[in-house]
Image (cartoon, rainbow, N blue to C red; front, side):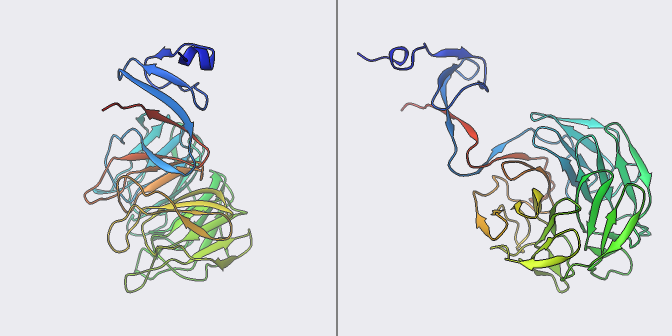
Length: 326
């Protein structure tokens, strides 16, 4: 009679928990869960449960990667709480100097920037993070909240569109940060609030949002370092969505308000958007970090405010399955 050892060349190994070193097709016994598990390679992207934030909130911002993320700001009430993610759990670190929600973020876990947000009287605060603490830097030229942010680190970022803090006009304005000052650059084509945004100063993407009259839009605009150009729309029009990705050719958009709360997830390949598996927890006004193959979604409103974190595993990622018997 054939056995696993005879077929594979080794006996089933015992591990306390998930065996991260397993290869495709490998079987092991998880002594923690008292179950047999095996590793396969996903054919489609999917969300998996991550560790919850310590502070449930929405209207927050994020930066970093799936295994080294940063969450900061949010509401209600307006907060400066900052948390660091290690791929398993969130740890509280030093707060923002100015508590606020509806802000944007960009950068990494150790080099980030918090941009704008609702902080009357609307002077457009900005702060940079060095991995330990936040430092107030030059204000935006145009104070705003409910904006999008993109950038590689705390010396290079974009502030995209949003709503004028006072008196409440929607903006097409885009500003570029060089590590010491904000400079007005070419506008977006469509003024929105609560868009998704991702990428870097030379290559960014803005998607979705809301125009005056509470109209949700699917409009997507691509930034080439000089100007924004309209490209193919999202399949689902929405505002308050999360968006992650390294540039304007690769993005993941998730969650939002259609106007009902949604978990819809879409993948952009530089030409068009395709629907993917939804978030497990539908929500709006959430934040994200990472890439289209290893993303992170956290916080938001279901309603009410949620601390839920989900990890995106893109197609081709290793996935652990549990063998069940009946």
